Length: 434
Image (cartoon, rainbow, N blue to C red; front, side, top):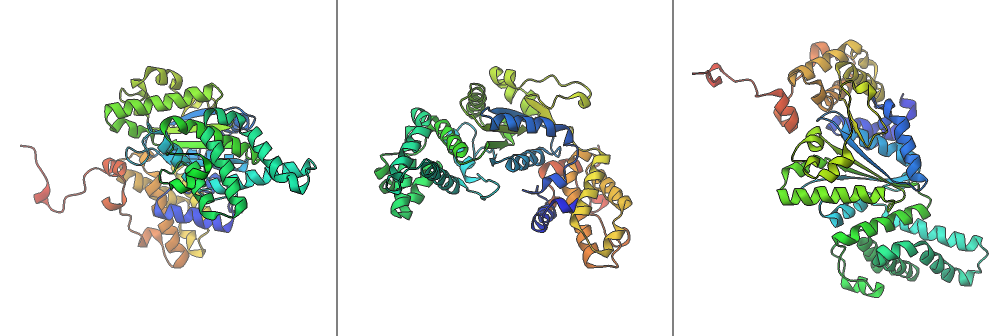
């Protein structure tokens, strides 16, 4: 198992698990129960790479692995040449009804297999380099290459210019600034292309642009970004909008605007306006089925509707909405054995055998009211702690030396709710019914 991942990524994955967070990379070696989705996900990525567009909704209760699934999908996409980005929807930082803010977050978290976030400038530079190579391969003399690249730029952005002329203008100006060595202007224009609101007028003036990106222009900029990605040898773009259920907790007018913004994105994907885009949203069942979520906007509810059969074995992975059934005791133990193999602890790890992994899984889930689906995060965190100790202390015996405690301060809100109230310090603290 560990041969499929580099030592650096192994350390990164274990470090994330030690902190109780979902790793950003290497998730294929930890995936449990996701094989059933692999063929459908790969087919949808192929469709987007061929110029199509895909919308996918992922539903699951807390702890079912929605973030894990979306990052697993993103890793598969990166291996196929996609750029990927993950945006956490929130009322204050990324309200879904403000598409200009969503676009800005998309660019801020944009990564590729070669470039870390934010990869926009690297992508634009590789695109311009590809245009220059195309001009040279066509036999254009050196003195005419600049003009030929300008012509190719205009040709490639002709369609985008109709929807977002400012995007094309900023790219032209960026190229001029880069050729002239004007670093400040070039960086300012990249920031403006990324939707950043505070760009000096002295930077925008040479490009003939003004103001900041607004709601209406955001979708045009997204089309421009997709065009640049395709021409720089990327298969497309995967955008993950995580935790869309936060829409249920905002004011009703803001919620309605957010739902309508999501409906607009879905319709534009269906209309073919975003070739190469894979849009993934994740949310809890109440968002999809409840009156304060998608059901509040019937056109959106209709687009998301899927008939789920009582037996999840027959769920359709190709459907617009898929559900994650969550962890069982068996899958939780399987995850634990994968984490143990990935950790690679020393000789003392022999005490952390399959029986202890199962014991730890039972104890953690039992401390959370028997709700196995809520247990994965804290279970893996505790398991890595045990493996760390076994790695450093050969005489460490977890059954004898490790006391399993779940402190309220280390639990999330959902985990604390599952655990129930903390035990009373004394009999005087116990409330008795009158």
